[in-house]
Image 1: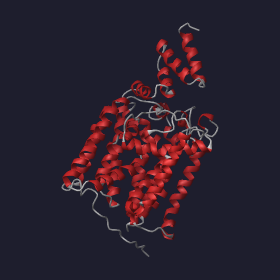
Image 2: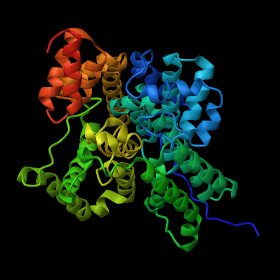
Image 3: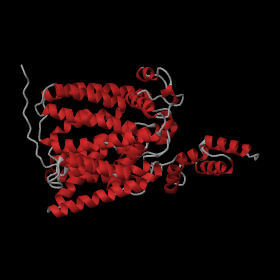
Image 4: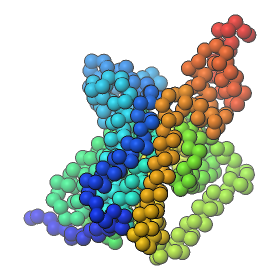
Length: 464
């Protein structure tokens, strides 16, 4: 017996308030053209940090590399990246299509990002969100996305984002009364998302945000979501065994410190999204001192914000909380409750909020829709926002042209950055190398490698 479902009418308000007379293809072209212009300075950039473990990994050129990828073979003696087989497959194919030419990898990242922005627009439009096209364009152009697009290694983000959004779209089609094939397609796409980057485990709880559409979640709906949760659980356990580092004292935190970190990081990303200035590849590592009263302001503000949201929940409405919930779900794994290797350098990173920023983009577009009462004001506000975001992304894109430019930009914003000093010192010899290693040793006396590298650099110069 064929299963029947209630067909949910979709409000066609996604672009009506912003671009009423343009066709879908023109709107896609606009997003693509603006994105190409904004990210163009980074498109001929060189390989950067960690790219030698991904796109530039010599193992990819060896016979049997594809079999090694899918049998979880080791690619390096430094790390074990066994949870990204779909990403390594894309790099393997890229190496055969354009060799070591970085332009091909940059173009792939950008095209995937543009596709994700268009998918985000389609999903929000399908959900009846106001100004969905503007939200998709903000997602495409926002400078916090630059790290995910311009850094070749973050193909992990844009590829997993593609499968995540396609899985979400397919599930919406299934939920709206389409055939069972869309359910199976959504499940398969979710598996590909997990094979690209396991942080996409948040898709099943994100699907529960169907509450934002005024839909109830009963026994039948939970049964439909059960395979998604099982896949997410399996991927989460596998990744935890490989990646979560509990022995590294540099990233071990006390429970109170984790609470302080979570509260501050929860605010860091929306604030950077609202005011994207002083963006950096590596931010200063915060001092999390539970004994300082100032550190507890972030949890206090979080509680106050939660109380205010609850107080005005009826006025804000379900769509607002669905978008906010999408942000929280997608950023939750990066709030410090789990120890991540990169926490030894910084507790936050722009690429952590790649998918989470979609919820913030929807909130921003909805906020503009609420403020602008006339079509002329709407067009002007939307154009101004996109010009500002695109211009900021274009200016910052040049930083990703070379490793030296990237690390010098980090040092400009954080003169004591261990990550920048190490990478600059490693790439130099003679007196310039000594200068960076001296700075690294002075800023981080606990870092023994800086001391040993400084000594080696001095010995090479005949100094003791």
